[in-house]
Length: 113
Image (cartoon, rainbow, N blue to C red; front, top):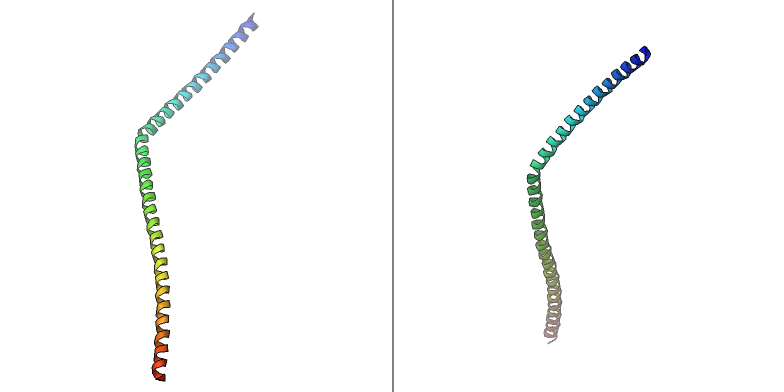
């Protein structure tokens, strides 16, 4: 009976130690929960500013894309104009060359007279 009483006391002491350990673990978990809740609230407070910055960045990107489109069209127009000017220049050079030949032929004819 004494052994049994000792065994029960021992088991009771072990249970009390386990209960104390569980309480410490619960307190640590509760502290972690409070810390995470605090971090979550801080993140939620910062969210409107982040969303505002994101919206501004998206708007800026859309403007830059629109500007890039305009510049691309201008570049294409300039290339087309340059090609047209090169063709006109070639035509003028050909006409100039024909005039030179006529003058030369005319000068030759005047010399023969």
